[in-house]
Length: 367
Picture (spheres, rainbow, N blue to C red):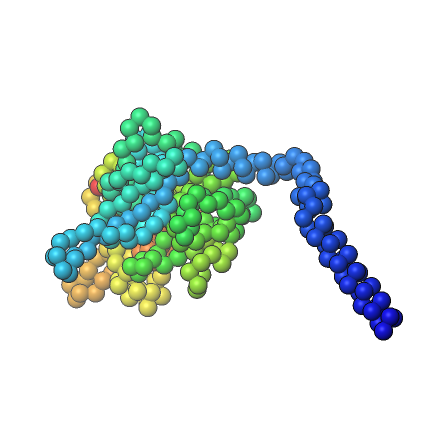
């Protein structure tokens, strides 16, 4: 009995001592865990410093756009504006013009623009160019209009150079993504069955809400307007597209001036149906059906097709190229002409009586 009691007494004494030790360890303030010591960071890498500086310098020129749709309340029979979608844009000039995508505002009854400083303003639609998925809005920010985005050039872009995209993907305002130019002169279909040609392809992440935001080069200049992604899931899969700034810089001033875009004027009439019939006879290109008097085409000496008494169409000139670009369809011709500004001198390659020849023409202002 004595040994058994001693053994239990020793057990309880040890248990109490262990419990008291644990209590002291848990409760004593001098034994509480402390935060880990912070390791020195050192200087940011030069590339990081450059990216941060570019974002901070251009962020103020980027805006968030919220569109509205007018719907009829089935109970009150009153029309009300409800949120419709979101997108991005950027300040074009000191007059408050905002550039975005046409598909961002298409079908909307109104739009509001939120600036980087938190102000939210109503926007007025100035003009659209669906063929290039571009639109211009205007806000009245008074004397405190944000700075305009610096404009660069896209004709000298090279695959592999660094780019940055700023926008509002999924409503996450002023998001920055980085990447490279992954390809040039891409073409994608539009929702209305057309095509947008000459696009810049990038692997900088572009998601829903980025549309209309700027694509920027490493000098902080605008080189494109982010317009679409190629993804079955609807989110970035590493392939995004932007309207090149050389097109933007031609289209936007016309939208501001007159509300619509008119391409350079050559002065011919043509038809894809006639082109298809000619192609069935081995004559691929754009058949010149008519030449307008006094037009650049007339001055260049282009010859129109003629119709014999039997009704047979006898081709005149068939346009097969503009400068170095081949032309097989009316869309090809349209894209080739749009790559030039009014007043530009071009070389028109044609087939005349089955023989190739070249004609010079100076494009005119839109009619």
